Length: 159
Image (cartoon, rainbow, N blue to C red; front, side, top):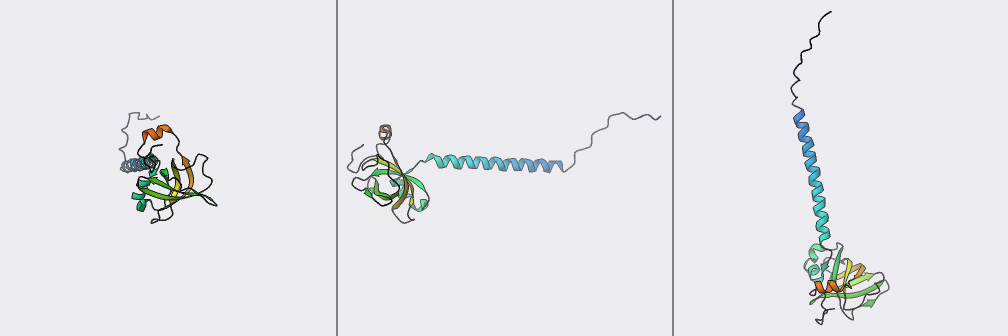
């Protein structure tokens, strides 16, 4: 019977292929983390601005184009006209105005001289007509107290 050598042997040196494998995994993790951060930032920044005011929308009309966004303004008294598909009216802020064509039934509280938010888009990049599919009536007295410059009627009164 021969004796078996039981002395511990030194482990083999790591091969050169192990380091690139780790770098590839690290690079993939960095790319995934970057994508997650990008999506979070994009999502948060998109939800920070709930609406554009009439003045902001007119200033940014070229960049907004026909993309969908929410528009806020005060309904010009006497501008509401019932149409076969809904209503048309004018939103004002200061001396600026945007004509709105809305499809669908306006809310029960909808009337002249109140702040509203409409969801839709400009008819074209050059048009001052806003095509809307939804009207949200703002009726909170705390909103009016917090934003008196945004909800002044054309005659200067604050609702």
